[in-house]
Amino acid sequence: MVERSGAKIGSKNGSRVYSLIHDLFQEIGVDFSREELKKTPERFVQTLSFFTQGYHENPDEMLASALFPEPYSEMVIVRDIDFYSLCEHHLLPFFGKCHIAYIPNGNVVGLSKMARLVEIFSRRLQVQERMTVQIAEALYKNLKPMGAGVVVEAQHLCMIMRGVQKQNSAAVTSSLLGAFQKEKVRMEFLELIRK
Image: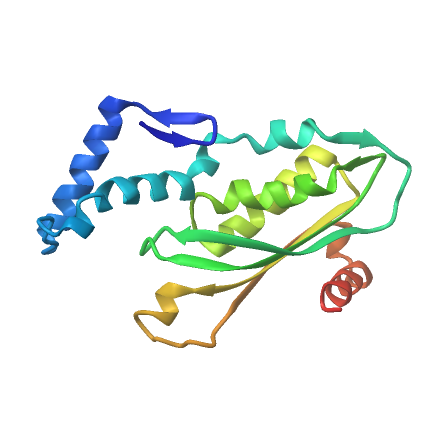
């Protein structure tokens, strides 16, 4: 039985997924008579389950569990949150850092929940642009702050290992909501995450 954070692939579905992966690998020429490869389909299913566990987690419930009334009204930033995700186009990893900020409007959220929010959305088949917007919108919807901002910097193995094969390329995306659309606030946020 394959476990996913709070969800399990039962023996019936687990066996079916295992069979599909085994057949796929055989189709591309993998020789499963080698002892070292016999458990590869099972390990692959477990890995894929881990990388997609964000589908089984609710960001709204997670944020609601850690909201606290607080009159603080200056920018709150958690920067350099490491993440790993899978590109939905090639099933290759992309990884990097996420910077999140918001300006409270009567409530603050536990700082670890901001990192957890990144984890929920990154552990899905993703594109960086959508992930950036999803994180910002979830924060903005649940905290109802004066503004929220997210910047994601990532390297994509689909650009590094295949295709154009540019080893030093990085993609940067942003989503700025509410007060973060004002130039002064945006510039403060961008300056603070660069320090």
